[in-house]
Length: 122
Image (cartoon, rainbow, N blue to C red; front, side, top):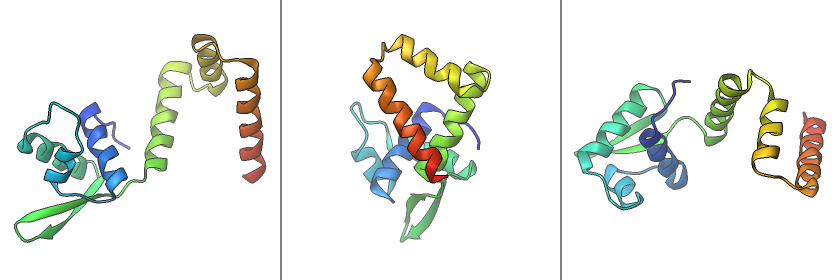
């Protein structure tokens, strides 16, 4: 998957939340200060070029919807993050966040239990 800019990712977050939207609806869900219509339109076109979004014509306008799920994007993004910053080691990543965020023993145990559950389901 192609990497996204922060703005493209923000557009995609809105589309995941709404399931589909016109550019004006994306702008309505954007935090202040609201960007110009053309700015959001450009981001949406970039997302289409990268195969994250598709559109349906509606009169003179287009309704956009994501064609990449939030789960698939998150999985790809996290894999890239781990590869770039932690040499592909999820152990190093968890260790880093455990130290930096000062996770409690209870939080670490909850994480271990969640991982065990997921492993049993796979």
